[in-house]
Amino acid sequence: MNERPGPPASPPSRREALGRLLSGLGGAALALGLGGAVGARAAGARAAGAGETRPGPGVLRVPAGGSIQRAVDAAPPGGEVRLAPGEYVETVIIDKPLTLSSESGYADTVIRADHSRFRWRGVNRNDQIVGAVNVMNARDVRILGLTLEDALEGVWVSVSRRVLVSGCMSCDHQSTGYYFWASQECTLLHSDARLNAVGVYQGNSVDITIAANRFTENHGGRVPHLDNDIFPGIGILVGNASTRCAIGGNRSFLNADWGLGIGLDCTHVTATGNDLRAQKRGASVEGNAIALHRNNLVGNEEAGLVGDAGTDARYNWWGDVSGPSGDAGGSGAPVRGGARYRPWLTEPVGVPPFSF
Image 1 (cartoon, helix red, strand yellow):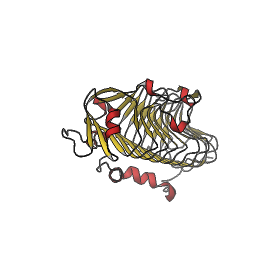
Image 2: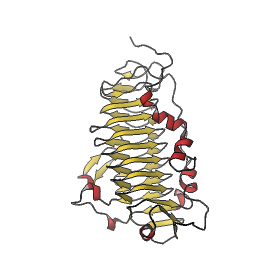
Image 3: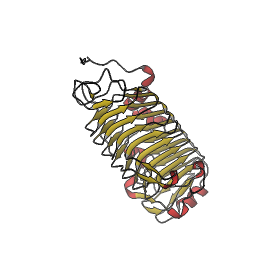
Image 4: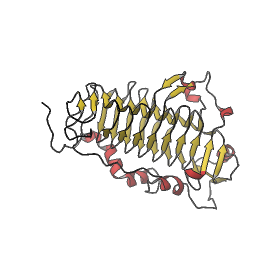
């Protein structure tokens, strides 16, 4: 007979780091150099210096129709390249500490990929050039307040450290909106990804934070630079032996297959405070030391969660006070595959609305 839990205890303390990030995003944003503001305007336009017409020392302004790459190449390490409103047809490569930002936010500043600069056939993944913006073998890079369109990857980060992407829109790419490969201590914050194969992917990476973003209508597809693999339509995907990934406060919905996918030998991944609904599965999970706490796993076609015995899925909202159905026997969303699910929440998790 199924038990009805009382108010749940707090999740284990080692799982609370992301909760602290979400409950105090202002402090987290300050630590990330966003001046304590985490709304998209602050993360994009304000952090990029919206409204400034006289760039200070180390800031190169690119006028509409100008060359982003020439400015990136000319900028000093630690400098900033700031884009005037407009559409730029380029494939940009960043290989040094740098901020690439817009003057007025993502809605007015579009980088559409120049496919002639792509490079992947016969090239090691670490050296591929497949994004509208490519961060390669670099550290301390910020990408703020841009729209990225029509690439294989919207933002491609490879073998890099301390990369922040914030206040961006990434859409209509053959592969993912944002891809972190063999990288460390990177953050995707308050950004949007839609109409790609996958919203965001991290592979072979350590200490990646994916917080307060929106992933929707990602439809899956064949990815030519990854051995023609066919990806299902997933909002957030963690794979290739990644570890210590923190996923929190995101909305992932209306994707073709899963809101969240974790697999391929991943360890120590924590997902907290996410809204995962209106697709085939809220989450599909396998791995070691995987924890999903305080998420909404409701309104999905096949299951709220499919997770193996290595999945700690306690303290989630399944859509009914009786808990999940499927393996659990309650009236909420199904849970399948051996994941731990007791105790569960008896009311939904409040996830702040997403807005730029």
